[in-house]
Length: 126
Image (cartoon, rainbow, N blue to C red):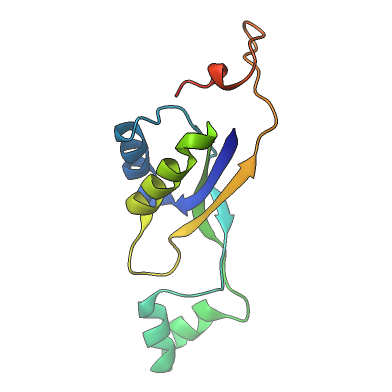
């Protein structure tokens, strides 16, 4: 059993939910708006403005990269469905621009259904 944790663009959430549902992955947890940054890459308009010495663009760049709003989703899934889950998230979120997000696959040692005390893969609604 694994936890697939993905940090994605905030505006890709609905597309990601649909893609996962269509792939047969119906259960997930999503955090509200979170903030983060990668390597500090900026929008093309800001970079172009900075190249042209536009004061507004230079002010936006500042000395430190700004944090951007994102979503975090977590999916606990049986080992045999991890690759399909990861590929689905990539397909739904991949663009030609930096900032598409990251996916982490983490081990899960046990799962327990609170209502019944049932344990293991059988508690997953997948």
